[in-house]
Length: 217
Image (cartoon, rainbow, N blue to C red; front, side, top):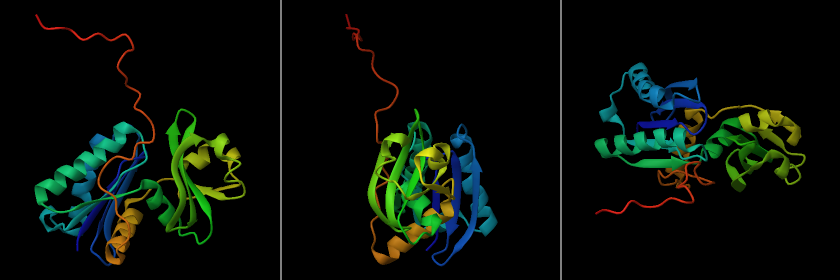
């Protein structure tokens, strides 16, 4: 097995390579505006550092969100195109699940990323591997009562720390954790998602209310 994993659903543009036993290379850059510029070079870098060629890849794992449309589609379109070109399977992983997995926590907690508009993408977990609620998108203050007393991880929790009992790391998703989780699920027959975007709200761009189609003569 040689699995390439990456995620662009948050400000982190993160890539990792897993040989079925361990992570062999990885890189992460935090830049919410340059997903399209940073992902392809990141893939080239991790392959080069491991001394491997893309033709050796057997699987791709990609974060499916939730996340903003613009960043999320960069990773998903790249995963689909690369998987199609190489004729290998592409597996989706919930970005919050990867963030939760990286925490290594053994008790209940909340994972939250920044959804903008003063909201967070969030999910509740029994431990690092087990999601019990979500994912959802809400104002942090609106979920404070339902997650009262639970520690929280992620940039969304850090941004609205007053809504959570305790805020801890990791702040951003890491493709190394996403790759580890994907390999674990592949080996154990766990749930993997299709490489489709996990959108939790409508896009900002809308057709104007008074829009009129132009008729052809």
